[in-house]
Length: 82
Length: 310
Image (tube, rainbow over all chains, first blue to last red; front, side):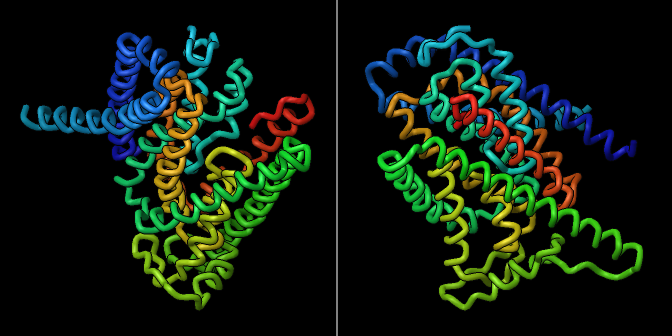
C-alpha cells in the first residue's frame, strides 16, 4: 500500500471512531433526557413535535459533523505542536 | 428496545446495521436508499405509515453528512441543486395527485408496484449497456492510443454523451451557466424538466427517487457523475426535510427510530462519500446497477406476498 493510502486510511479511521462516539453519545443523551418529552409532544403537540424531530435529525447530522471536524483539527494542531 | 411512538420492539443493532448499509449506498451513489430501508423497517414490524415518514427523517440526517463530505470534495453544484428543488417540489405534488386519482380508479398497489419494477429494471438495463460500452471504449482507446468521446463537461466519459450534448443545445431561454459542473450553457427548462421527472416519481413511487434523478442528471443534463451524486444529496436534504415535517405533523415519524438508524447511516455515509474519490464515473455507474434490480425484486416480493414494501 502507498504511504498516501496508509495516511488516508489512518485519518479516515480516526474520523470514523470520533464520529461514531459522538453520534452514539448524542443519541443516548436524546433518548435519556428527551424520550418521554418527545412521546408527550407526539401525542399532544404534533406541530412542535414535527419541528423538534426535524431539528434533532438535522442537529445530529450537521452539528456533530462540525464538532468532529473541529476535534480533528484540534488533534492535528496538538500533534504539530509536539 | 421499545420505541413507544411507533409502538414497536426492535433491536437497536438491527436499525444501526440497516442504517449503515443505506448510508454507504447514499454516500457513494447519492440515493436515499428508501427502496432498501423501507422494506427493512416494514419487516421489523414498523407500521407502513411510520415506515414512510421515519425513513424520510433518517434520509435527511444521512444526506447532510454525505453532502457535507461531498462539498469538501468539490462535488456539489449548489446553483444546479437550488434550481432543481423547484422542479422537484412541483413534480412531487403531481406524482401525489396521480396516486390520489389512482386510489379512486384502480388497484393502486399493483399499478405503482408494476410501474416501479418496469422503471427500475429499465434503468438498470440501460446503465448496464452504457457502462459496459463506455468501459470497453476506454480499454480500446488505451490500447489503440485513440480517445473516447468525452462527456460534455469534459470531466467524465460516456458512450451516450451525444444525448446530453443535444439537450445542452436546446434553444429555449432563459439559459444558465453551471461552472461547477463544467456546463457552459443550458436551458433552465431542461433542468426543471429533469427535476420534475425525479419529483414526479418521488411522489408517485415514494422515497427520494435518487435512483432516477442521478442517472438523469448524468445522461440527460451532462453533469459529471461525482457532481450528480453530491448535488442529488444536496437536493434530497431539502425535499426529504419538507417531507419529514409534513409526515411528522400527520403522525408518521418516530424520531427515536430515525436517530438510531442515523447512528449507523451517518458513519456509512461518511465512508460512502469518501470512497467516491477512488472511482471513475463509469465504475460508479456500473456499481450502481444492482441497486434498482434489488429494489425491483423487493417490490415484486411485496406484491406477490401481498405486502408492497413501499
